[in-house]
Every structure is written in C-alpha cells, then in structure tokens.
Length: 291
Image (cartoon, rainbow, N blue to C red; front, side, top):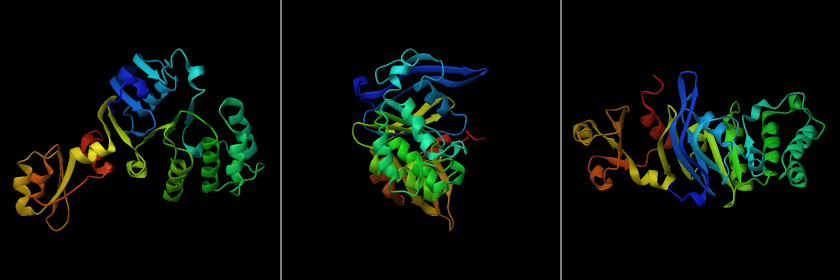
C-alpha cells in the first residue's frame, strides 16, 4: 500500500500514544488508499482501537495524521461530514425504536439519506415502531445495514462490527455491505480479529502488534510473497533448511511450512505448494504475542 499521499484516505506517520506505562501506538506508520477495503487486524491490546480513535479524532496522539487531507485533532467536525463509524452491531439500546434510530442518525449525519434508508427497510420485516428488544439478531443486522448504506460517506470505519453475531448473520452483514454499499469512491476500514470472516472482501491488509504495523500489503502481493508447502516426513529436513517462517504438523506425518519470499519453483520440489490463508499468516506473524 504505497500509494502517494494524495491518493490516500488516511496517511499516518510516527503515531505515538501511551496509556500509563504502555504504548498503544509505538511510532506507527501506515496508509489507507482510496477506494479500497482495508483490514486492520491484530490481537486484543495490539492498538487497533487506539488507531481508529486517532483517525476519528477521539483521542490525542503524537505524530502526523491526515484523514481526507485533514488533521482529526483540529478539524474533527469537518472530517465527520465524510466519515461514518459503526461499532459492534449488538450494542443498540434495547428500548430504542427502529424509527428513533433512523431519526437519531438523520439528526447527526449530514450525508444521511432517509429515503434510501426507508427503501432498504421496505424489503425487511422491520417496522418503525418495533423496539430493539423485539428484534432478532438478523433484524438488528438489517437495521444497521440500512443505517450504514444510507450514509454517503467517503470513509466507512467498522470496529468489530459483527461481534456477538453468529456466522450466518456475520456473512450476511459483509455480503450486503459489499453488494449494496461499496464502490470505487468509497473506502472501508475494518478492524477485527475474526480474520476468516473478512478475508474474501479485503483488498489490503494491515497487521498490528504491540502498537506497530508489522505487515502492510495488498492481497495480491501477499499471494506472491508468501507460500505454504505441504511436505512429507522425508522432505522435512530439506524444507526446514530453507528457513521457514512457521511450521505446523498435520496427521499422517505431514507438515505445513510457511515461507516468505522464496521462489515457488524451488518450493514445489519439496511438496505441494499453495497460498496461505490470511488466518494462518496472521498466526505465524503474531506467534508469541498471546503468550
């Protein structure tokens, strides 16, 4: 993700934020290009939420940060005209009526299109008089989607948006987001640790650990750079000699080794090669973090 600054929705250089004795952001630098779907992925406490708060102007920090060309510390009101932020979809107040949720968003976001929201809801079982406590999880997802898709924001920030939902509704949320909301003029930044959930929709990925970006790449580059090899026991010594990034054992004496930057033709002589899943790559790079 090395687009020049003018093509970036977010450009961060040397961000630093400390809470007591812990650095939440430690000389953190990254960029989010325009018209992309970027996953900011890391374990709990890695700095994901602090980075989002900095982008949204919700916390102070040291360093240089531009979001849509503005400094969120100085121009938050102007910035939020073009930014939409959605956190955990499971936290809507249970007493809130559907119509009241629509009224609230219409009152706080200048780019909210009420007619578009109501058109989306017309295809659902949602009634403006229903309270959140009367809705199923699926209906809550539909309400959130209606609110999000009716906001014509240039940057949509999602912080663990499907936490607490089962897999069916998580998949529905992301699929509708992709089909009905995203286009080349919008940018979506998603933070999550449920890597498998979003792998298929991402164009770019940022791995963050201990307040630092440890991987920044587009998905196409990842498939070129990293290779997994499924090897049998007799080929394992030769494979290990090439310096694998990670190794895990499988049944029947098989092993999977992950390599960074090794020629695929050379690795193919050792066994079956394949592109690693984002979750396996995440685990390999984060190894030791959870300890």
